[in-house]
Image 1: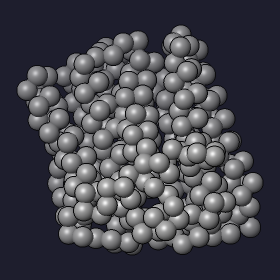
Image 2 (image 1 turned 135 degrees about the vertical axis):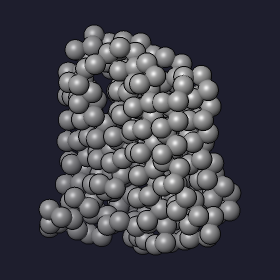
Image 3 (image 1 turned 90 degrees about the horizontal axis):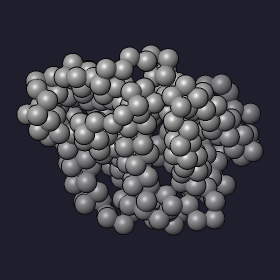
Image 4 (image 1 turned 90 degrees about the vertical axis):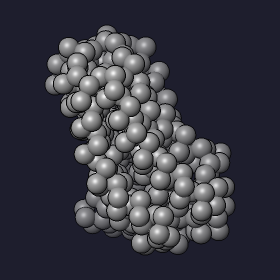
Amino acid sequence: MATLAEWVQGARPRTLPTAVAPVLAGTGAAVGAGAVAPGRALLALIVSIALVVGVNFANDYSDGIRGTDDVRVGPVRLVGSRLARPEAVRTAAFACFGVAALAGLILLALSGLWWLAAAGAACIAGAWFYTGGRRPYGYAGLGEVAVFVFFGPVAVLGTMLTQAGLVTWSAVVVSVAVGGLTSAVLVANNLRDIPTDALAGKHTLAVALGDARTRVLYVALVLGPLAVSAVTAGFLGWPLLLGLLAAPLAVGPVRRVLGGAAGRELIPVLAATGVVLLTWSAATGVGLALAG
């Protein structure tokens, strides 16, 4: 029987910046467009956090029953480490998806944008079939693409839409950058797991690209948003330069990756990348609000 602390570890709290970041950016864009709706922002945050925790438990369950997690380098896995019954972890995943669905329906009722229910259903399906089902797309090198779409444009623009009822071009650009940075978190994770994933037959994008090219991809995804800050500031003014506050935080993880860090040495890179993501998204959200 897993302890409460082990369940918390299984939820992978270090991935929570990927849930908070798009809501911060989208809310900042909404404020910049003249909409102040803290209640809707909170509901969007609940949806996002519940989905991230749910996908973490879903991955734990699906990878665990396949044997992919029998040899782990990263955080504890409940099923792979035999700490919890697979059925219990699957139930935890579905419970999180249920919370996300409930909060999402309330948000749609308040905003009147019922057509976004299709996007919500796609998010839940994407969370489950990432490593679940007969043909999980995460095993076919499509994980980063899904993370980019769901935690970039879908999450950022969905957050803005449900608060402001519209989308601006600046929010679209920022959503792409958020998606890229969020993908960088997964790229770092999969870079670490290249040896074990290849052995288990999990053909992630990192396995397909190989070690060297995966490191180049990581650096591009981390530095891209900083370039976005500089370019958008030329159109919207100095507030968008606030995103450059994340630049010093990006130095450490980029150096580690370019320096050849591998295995457990990459674990701090995941956390550091999450901090870069959260900082850039928060600062850019403030910039969008001020540039309004």
